[in-house]
Length: 159
Ligand code: HEC
Image (cartoon, rainbow, N blue to C red; front, side, top):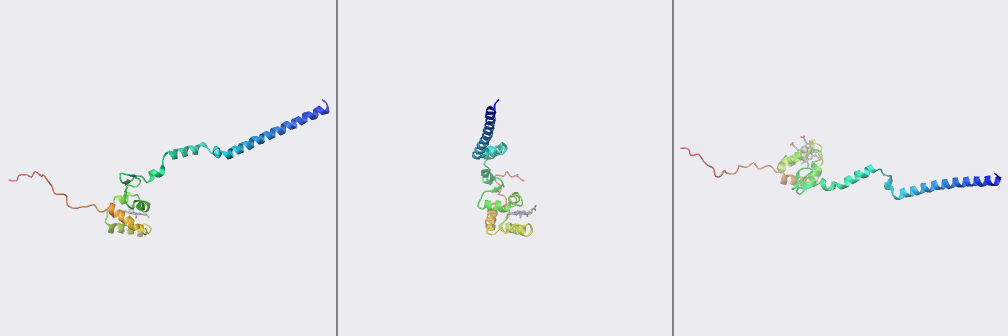
């Protein structure tokens, strides 16, 4: 082998090496570009599945659903002031404590004052009127009046 052939072979080897390095760079650059255009490909498939599950259930819609005039989440009657009551009266205890009680205005206010003095209930401000109105309108004292007169009774004939 003469010097000239040796030189040609070495030049060819260097050329091939450079071509290889350039090729690797090209592939890397291409991949980076591709990922920049499609960032979703970097995310794992796990969270994507979860996201799909969430989108099939419209959460917000169901959260404050009203069914047959009842606020499903709390069991409170759907009426003026409902959300004010939900937002102020269901934080510490279940709304059952509210719906189970039937009181007149004075006793509702007394209950609120008692919670404010002993249970850290906050000052309700202008909402107090809305809440008390709601409570008195929807959870007034049960009428304990006389039962209705009996009708169509067969009386015994007492001789
Ligand atoms: C800061 C917490 C808190 C908030 C907010 C709150 N309460 Fe209470 N409430 C309590 C505690 C504590 C009790 C006592 C629970 C028990 O006895 O187990 C109570 C008891 C009650 C009772 C039962 C009283 C009784 O005589 O047994 C009613 C009725 C009531 N709350 C209604 C309401 C209403 C209406 C609101 C909205 C204005 C409200 N609560 C908001 C803390 C709170």
